[in-house]
Length: 65
Image (cartoon, helix red, strand yellow):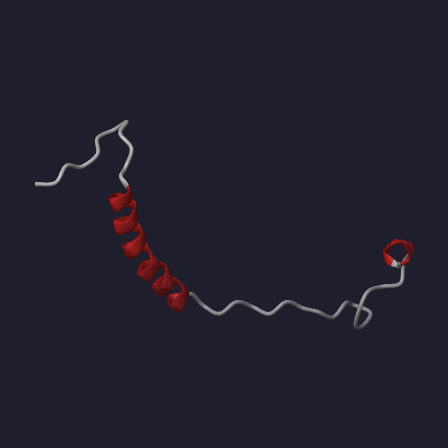
């Protein structure tokens, strides 16, 4: 009969590997069952890209080399 760890005892490496080997297929099944993610809206209200503001100009000026 195997010995199970009691409260306060640490689990062995073998116990960790048993848990890891059973949790990977369960996680893969959960991902396969999950609904598709929604696509992000990439267009802004006034059109494509970033709005031309003082903040964006300051960022672009600081990002130049």
